[in-house]
Length: 166
Image 1 (cartoon, rainbow, N blue to C red):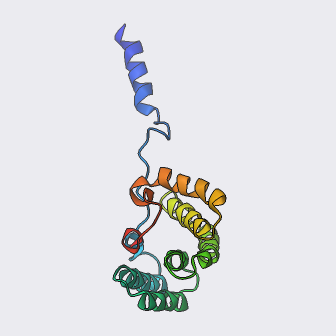
Image 2: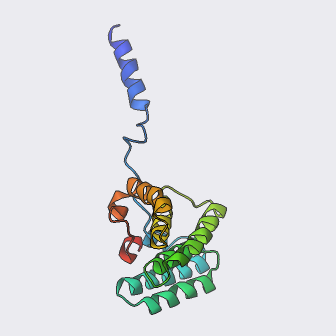
Image 3: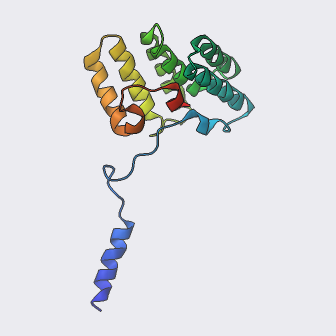
């Protein structure tokens, strides 16, 4: 009879959820994880985005930009193409342009029900980095801090490389 309360307590502990601060954070999104999802247009568009990221990683930004633009011609509703474009512009000559691409990516992700804890660190971090590049450091700090908290392996350095997004 004494074992019954102990078993009940163990059962309750087994069913308890870990608090968010103890539970492991999900891995940040890598676009290659989505390459085979969606209809034919989305899959083709994602292949073009991935080719663009490869070109960006190889130091060929003009070729990368062409890949992202082609991806949007194939599927103008691909939020990940806008995300890649935001990252691309952030590391180019006009980092402030990243903000409009981030807004478009966020809007499409929300409309498609695809906002997730895996993509949130990239949205936050890219926004923070773009604000920082535009001289708006006070606005940038909370976004960058949130990105580092959500995905330290990708955002500890305050930047998202093409390889990290790929």
